[in-house]
Image (cartoon, rainbow, N blue to C red; front, top):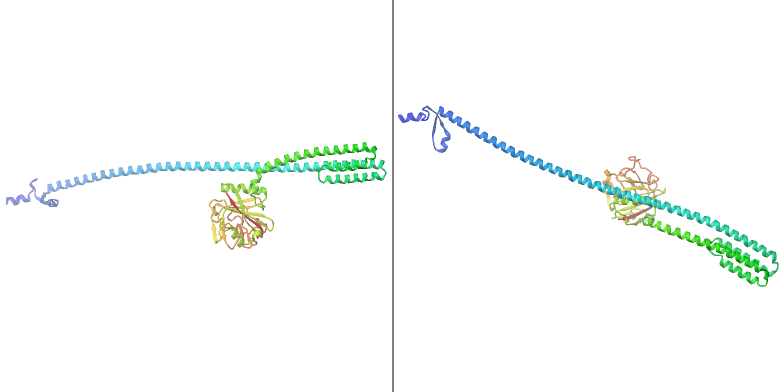
Length: 440
């Protein structure tokens, strides 16, 4: 009886048992709880729960600190990368700026060289004009001098006629007339000396005047006259030869600056416009032109699409020059490769393609947003330049049209209109075409 009472009374607090701790069954024990034990148990559970919460909060704070550290590290890394990127961009911009400055300097030097060569050409033209004027003046002086010589011989003839009246001296008069005729022939060639004529005349006079001693004095006078004429003429000829040789040497020295470019000049282009295109081509390609090879000439090879594609197929860096029925000179250049295909556009990422007009002294560069349609390939047509049909020549090189400004820059562009600006008429009607392959 006593044992059963103990069982239902808490041994710790001497209170009635009201509950059982189920957690104790996991360790193989049975624990009975009174109301006070139950309160203590609940307090212990709360304390334990609070401690777990505190531990969890501490763990979360630690994790948060770690996350903050990681985030700060990432932000620091991003900041460093941003600084490095900024420095790289600045270095790249500095490099590009330097390259642009170098390119500008090169263009300025080429421009200065072109101006110097232009001045050389002007000086050359002035020298040629001066030389021509000099020769005209010199020829007039020589003609005047020969007129005076002829007048002197006529006076000598008159003197002979006064004191020579017989048949023996008649032949002497004829001899003087022959001498006069020969001097007239000398006028046509200023470099021919008077010595052969003088010797012939004096020889005839000596043969006819041997029997008459009264004419010796007059003969010496004639001889002295001819000697003076010859001396003066030889001096002038020698002076002219020296001057001509000097001018020729100067012209040869000046020609050395012009010939290398003019040797590459297409036949249809003027010298001054070829100089302009020459430097534009070198600036756009950033390379020097070493040679130009004529690969197609319409008047020789045939103005039709078949012959045209036979010559240009597979080639690049082609300079095309056209002459229309109205004698307008125009053309185009592109570094792209021409291939015999149908309906294909070729992109020019270098933006070095352009159309030009010698007649209008203009160059029309490729638009940046139209670089995908620099040239068109179609084996049934002739040249097709620009997606807007800026320059289109049909397979017969007669039909076609121009809408300059679609893909190439032109300030007077009128969308959809066929313009005669480039050809001189609505249709091209090509009468000559030259195509050169440029070697850089």
